[in-house]
Length: 97
Image 1 (spheres, rainbow, N blue to C red):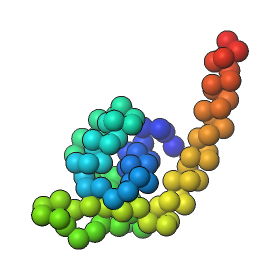
Image 2 (tube, helix red, strand yellow):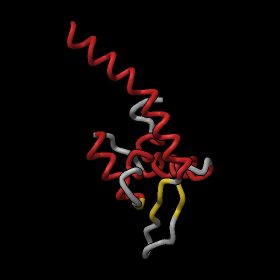
Image 3 (cartoon, rainbow, N blue to C red):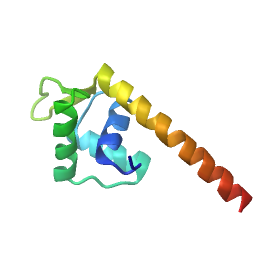
Image 4 (tube, rainbow, N blue to C red):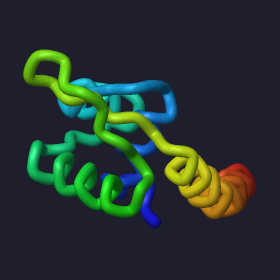
């Protein structure tokens, strides 16, 4: 799992609340510095919906918001737990270098 994995970035964005596609792209750009193109974003959204990690809500005008599901929250928590030791170890080693 990479910190630039689109599925992880979408889940992290939705962990802060419901968002539609453009709002997800803007949020990811702001917190991760990663530009998700529409094809990448909607491919990730499709995979996450198929896995039951996010749910599409009723469209507001032409925008369709998405919400993190309990299964999506659990998956995101598990991925963060896997990344934390790597980040801690890397930071410690950089301080010692």
